[in-house]
Length: 204
Image (cartoon, rainbow, N blue to C red; front, top):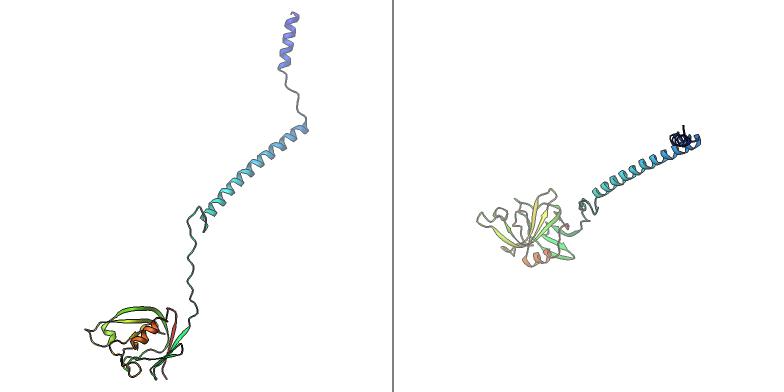
């Protein structure tokens, strides 16, 4: 065999040799690095998942810019109700802010309820059913300066201007439970009452 052929075979054998083994310490170091990289990748994925979950949850919370506004409406609360008027059925007088107003209340057959009456609405003008006026079925009345009241037992009553009998307030009871006043007094009182105010009605 020629020297050139021998050299070529020698070089080929050298290229095919297995690389020298890596020391054990180096192998352990590389394994530790691989584990750390895997843990970092897992942790990163978990953080991304958590961030997405937080974003979704925040988006659903009330007031979020991204989600619908689900903020509950404020709960309605009743303020302190003040007694603004006192009515004495025996004397046919109502006292309001130091002023005394003559009234006509319900008859013996249809007495005016007593106790605390709460103002629920005020009306510049209101049509009153004929059956409530006691004037007969043909007399539906449209009365001015009407104040709607709720009685202690939950029924509805009214404070009205007795335009059909201005002389009755302070003299005689002619209503079917309403509280009637002269027109000027009814207007004055209408302008001072508001829902939530209380009128105390007493007998004796």
